[in-house]
Image (cartoon, rainbow, N blue to C red; front, side):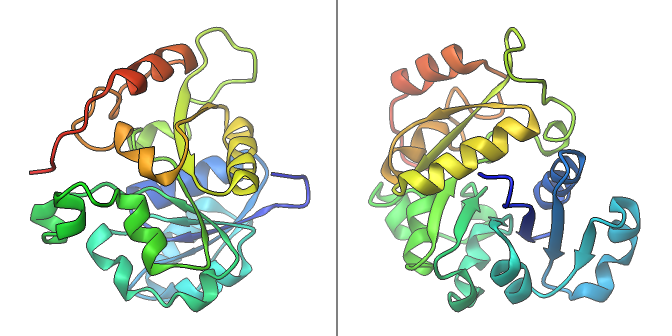
Length: 219
């Protein structure tokens, strides 16, 4: 992420989306946030976030964001229009909950990770897995300056090295180290029910946990 990248587009205004917005604004960025109910439903949140935030449609958040966060239910990702996401660095915060999302056979059979599922629907986006393994309320509160002993680390995964570098820089601005798991096909290592899921770890601890994690089918 460079100093020129200062607009964070956010698709989804729930716990993850709103807390990433808070953290981004605290770090000096502007946010464009959207949800499925329309901009008029976000008046209270925008008032709380202040002048660096505005409400828009999902298409506007995607097309105008320098980085774009998808923080909606995985089962609704296929409702997104892929066009505004083309060429964008897309941060995917999804986890798979069949009771909420419905059964996704490719994920059930370990033929796809959640982020590969998102990438398949947004083929021209540059998807990076991030923010899926931290409780939402801790995103704007747990960040610390670079070099802080035991600084919290968050995992990332992606197939595009430039996109990952931008997300690593963004995380650093929010106060987190990053641990690169590799491609999107390795992002299962920090998904739901894994040892690293919603567990506070520093970079060394997270690297060790992810390396030891065994893949189990989602149920």
